[in-house]
Length: 636
Image (cartoon, rainbow, N blue to C red; front, side):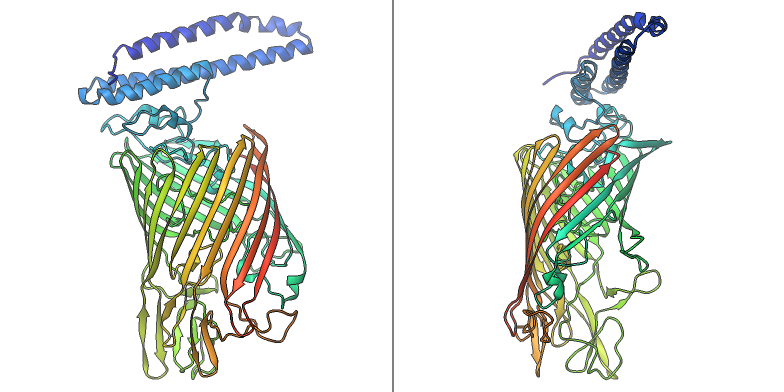
């Protein structure tokens, strides 16, 4: 075991002061002679002089960082002398600070990023991954003095998370993956007293060329891909927009030596207002993507989140932390068929163990049952139906929701009796990231016999699944796999298949849902990211017949006879059974520097939709697409 040496800070202090003094003395003659040199210098001489000035300024910045490191070591030394039980802990901290400081002097490493170490493993390589505004707040276990390297990390605006090294790491600042993390960057950082503000986002110009007309732009709505009976099946379509440009803001402050509170906003223009037109103004509405607060305590390793964020059911990259979702790097705004995700209100409680390698989480999230009422309607009932009410064949009325009023849009809001309950366990060994998860959902409705009365119905639905990231070549090539199966969870997939239909008695009937994705992501050069993904999502069937009517989802007696010829007068119920997508693409960074990052992307995608069989067979359709994107990330 390495013991703390009380002479170390003093020796380092003298060495660094000496280096600083020597540099100042060495550059003093140059500085004093500048007026004379400028007076008789040629253009070439001035260029050389400006280059020398830039070198001197770089040395000054390195020396300033070294002085900060010395101050950190002094603080660590003073803390260590306060108790023998903490000597070993500060020895690790002091050593890490010493190495970081020497790197700052020599110019070998860029110490503008934060450094985080997982106790008690003194893995110095953590500074490469646990850095940047995407990381979460962490302090030392000491009760009165935080570990300086973890808190300051050479950037006052960075509070670094303790994340165990798993060779996957948080979203890298150098890859397009940061777009999924809110695109917070290293630039655009401001201080307002004790609060740090970090800007993020990007300007986006994306377009798609497709062999069907879907009228959804770069957002794939697979359920609306036309079958052969529609004329738009037989024509190509081009559409482009800047509506998915993103704006984000994070505010963060240290409550005390062990806890940090932060707030995060993320917005884009993906919403279409009633006045939006695609012919002249293209005035899309600003919409809320994420808005939440987070509290993190490193003394007890507990984390809390409240607000609208990516559902905890969404696969992650490391731990169970916000802004570390493992999402495909695709250009299409709907990401990938079969991808598990949602953004919704939640109250999330997380605890990590075993030096930040084992994470457990419980999330209480907003529920919203998506119903399919194929064949059911408003005719044949003895009373007039209103929004959210369905006329059953026996004359009863099933109420599954109501249209939004007041400040909500007029779409149907389902009737929910309880929130969704989601649990997750994440494991970060030295190689890879692994998750298992489960969800409980409670579809609820009311069935009424007009003039007699009614009763409420609640059923229990849910499912489970998991995900993993395998770093085949750490930080160069990784394999991603995730999937989930269960009843009543179709809305958590990108295809947005229904959660439930209705039984003959009008009560909810949850549908079986299976969704999975797999892919490979590689970073062959610092400028290039290449990816390939395959996704699949399917829905089960639940149906009943009454008289001559066929009701429910996937009923084999449904009329599909008109799905095959253009403008056919026959029926085309065609409830979707499964959707698959295969896609490949790449992002290339043209410029990256203090001014931000400019990158372009190209993606090829093929989707196939299969319907449940009915009278007339099981129709299918497909969609081929070419996506193009140019993106400017000013804060990365």
